[in-house]
Image: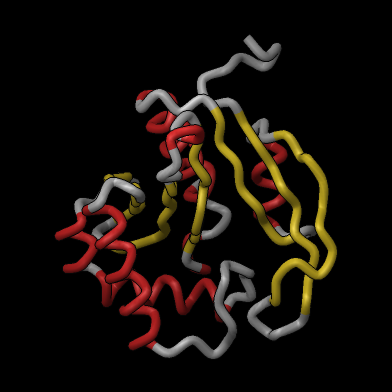
Length: 177
């Protein structure tokens, strides 16, 4: 498996393939901001909007591939406020259903954490559906659970679900140093 960071041009060029990953993730029940069924045109448009954010430096996107096949993606969203340039939000960790259980999510997560530390980011945060497989991944990867908010977001089915908020200090040792 290889993981690469996409330029805005690469993201635009790959929007169709990335849209298929997004649709598969939503169809698989992941609560990542979309309701099912998600149309291909809407998914392509969403990725093209991310390309603009990458071009502006507000977003960084990585993809994981094996044998030329797209298996997953993860992104960091960087705030534009002067008082928050030390942090970033980990967003849209997606793994194709065919790639799950193979370490793709863990590899993408580690890649984003390492890149954040190298960029001087000292605090990462994220939210994920409470009780989801992603929640278990973040806990096992050393993220700190802050708490849960009831009825925070709708699952792809439309049902309101709680979300759990996590943070991590990239590059920090487990003792906090």
